Image (tube, rainbow, N blue to C red; front, side, top):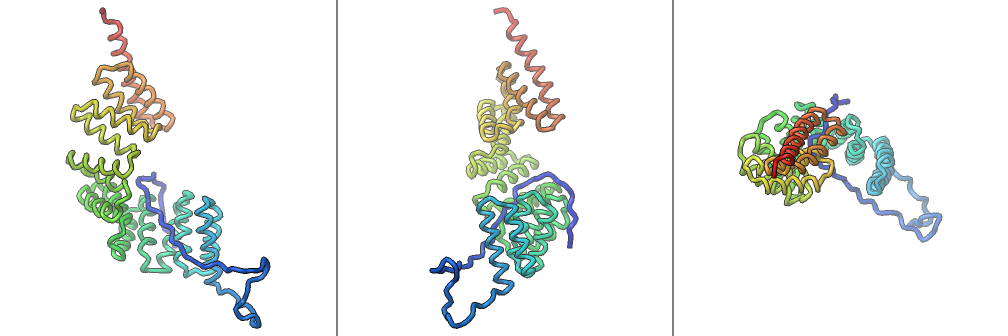
Length: 317
């Protein structure tokens, strides 16, 4: 079965899990031949399952070494030798997803789920791939199946939250992200998206708490720092906002919104020369990243800051 996907920008981090299969290596005292416990009997030929497991382990070793193409080839070989080996299909899907091959990854996760209908992570990653392909209804179906099999599967709750976020079902999104936080306590993304959902409901204090939680898990979460800065800016807490925008830029020097936000603060603080610098930097980043609308917005504010700075410098002293 081929599942139809559309191109869609990455909206969330899908948890990637490596399913390890431990196969004890053959230990030999000879550099040429393994020792049989019964020297008078011929060595038994490996079964297709044993050979497939060998290829699966080769793929896992390639993943650990960062050799994604080699891993994909090894996992494919394992699936061809033993089409019922769910772990081979599943790890193939993870490797393909890591290589950016979304459609083949979804097909591999589907095959893993077919090989083992009780394998919750296969359904969850299939749902996540379909979500990224903007096939929301099928994504929901597979994510729900994953959660039926394993109600504590954190990244399935997280991706269900992302679906609800796209659908602007903020109550549903909040419920899913809260579950994701419960079962994936070391992952900052559910807390961040929980904060976004609270913002959409106008629950500012809860949003602030959620962003702070995301930052506590990952102090270099640029988007979380930025959203905290935005909250403080709207509350008139300009020094706190500026500190947050600076942390955001420190975490990701290519995050244009952080410089844009800092420029707005500098305007409020009447530090126009500083505003000119950061608006110019933000504009250039937006242009480089192909974000023409925000590049135009930054350009307008840059011109405004330049005028304010010139007026300030031309005032009689």
